[in-house]
Length: 239
Image 1 (cartoon, rainbow, N blue to C red):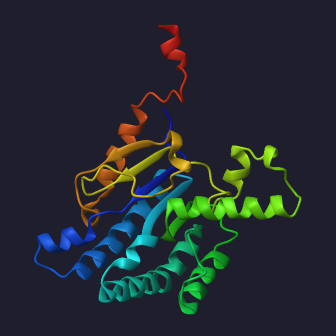
Image 2: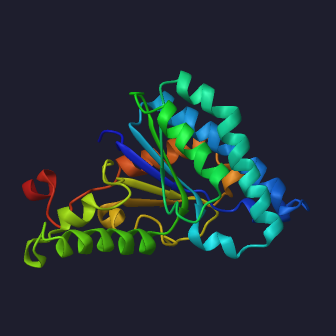
Image 3: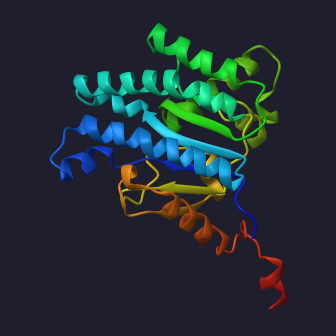
C-alpha cells in the first residue's frame, strides 16, 4: 500500500513530558516545538503531500495565563525563526481555526506565513490553531445558513459535499492517517468531520520524544491496514 497522502498528528504530552523530568510545563512546550520541526522535515523527506498538526485547541484557553503567554510566544518564535526555512523548502502553510478572537499581532503572523508560502508546491503544512472540531462544524453550518437565507441554496439541496466545502479544510483531502502521542486514545475534538474514515495510530511516547522512527513505524502500521470504507477490498472479495 502507498503512503497516505494526508497525515494528521495530535501532538499530545508536552506538559507530562516536562513534569516527569521535574521541569516546568513551558519546557515541555519548547521541546515539543523541536519535535514539530523534526516531524515536518521527515514528512517532506518521505514525500507526504499533506501534514496537519493540532497545535492549540479552542479549549486550551482554559489553561493558566502564564502557560498561554508562553505558548503564544512559542508560536511567534516558530514563525519568525522557521518561516524562511519552510518557504525555502517549498512548504505551503495553512492555518485552520477561529481567528475572530485572536490578538492582531498573532493574526498578522499567521497571515504573513500563509501569504509568503501561498505559491509553494511541496509539503502542505496545516496548523490547527485556536481550533475545535465542533466549532468548525458550527461555523460551517452558519455559512450554509447564510447561503440559504440569501436564496443561493435550498435546504433540500444541502449535501455532505456542501458542508465539507464550508469547513476550514475545504482545500484539503481528508486525512487517511491520524497519529496521537502520549498513549491517550481519543480524538479530542480534532477533525471530527474529516476523520470519518481515517486510520488511527496511538503512540505511547510523549510528543517531545516523537522521533523519525516513531513516524516511520506509524506509516508502516497504516500500510498494513485493510481499508474497506464500509465495503470489501478486492483481495477480500477474491477470497
